[in-house]
Length: 294
View 1: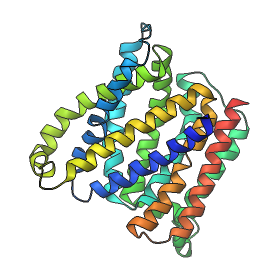
View 2: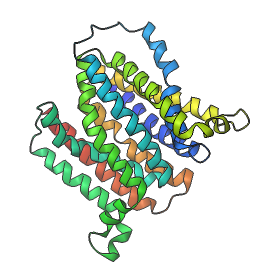
View 3: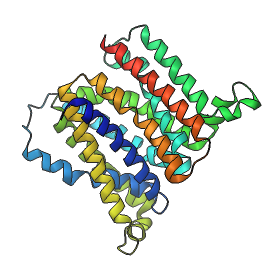
View 4: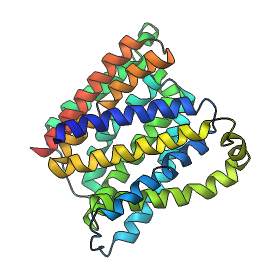
């Protein structure tokens, strides 16, 4: 199985994860879904420990794990709140802003500087986000962007993109201090353990009701965990075969799939504008990531 197929599968699995999350959020508290996403991925990921070599752990591993784990906890919670608050087709494309923000955070944290081509990608992402909400243009030329950020879902997802623009740099440091799969298992385990007390305190009363056998919600959360683990396995194996930038570029096409699924499954409106906007933003991501590999 070549890296292109694995990368496309990664994008599809990400979109499926978003769709299942959106559906589950209709009946389950967003904090419970956030915990389920991480908790039910662990059994599948732990199985991989029998097939991977335990790496030599670097001296900065623990500090990086704590930092990345905390950011992962908050981004997971905000991600679910964003999906719960607004249309899938309007919220998910905002993740495309993370490469834009990486142009700022990577030079500071890792000392990695992008080429001038990255500016073209930035402009494409901003243009795509404008097209997402272009129906508001009649109220003023800046209204599509202003109106987009007034909506809770896109606004929260933009915060997620900001967190990811920092945490992805820590992920790279974590991999450098261990290995890709070992780091993935470690950070997901840390995130799960951190989410448990938050859910118990803030959504404990929802746990028994949301996860009772009569609701059938547990099966969706288990499926969510399975899809999440498959996403990580496909992505890590693709990265092992090809440049990270190429793999992530294809992965970001998940935004287009999610917009389409939002229209087909959840009957969301203004689908045409949102598909065009998501495609433009995805092209911007590809330009940014490929410019970094040149």
